[in-house]
Amino acid sequence: MAYQSLKSKPGQMTPGVNPETLDGMSSIVIETMVDKLKSESFEFQPGRRVQIPKASGGTRPLTVAPPRDKLVQEAMRMVLEAVYEPIFSDNSHGFRPSRSCHTALKMVKQQFQPVN
Image (cartoon, rainbow, N blue to C red; front, side, top):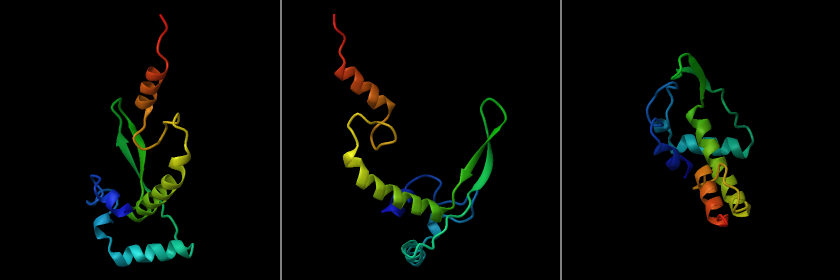
């Protein structure tokens, strides 16, 4: 599921900063990663650091994680979300699926009507 989630995002299947892509993943590679995770021997690799231009001039650093690390991170995110999402307060909007500062403002507007 994590692979399917990541491969649909633009730029994941074509080499850019890192020559390795999700396109090169096979079931054998994924099974090896799962075995390493189970045996607690999986190690995240350092990300590549690139400088990208800013609109105001100059550059800013951007770290790009290797595809295997992104896959493990996405799987971890999916598990943690499934465990903790049901117990979060309905008033919590930060970094949650289908929620944002816009949904928080909409909720405030609906619940706190002005008194005339």
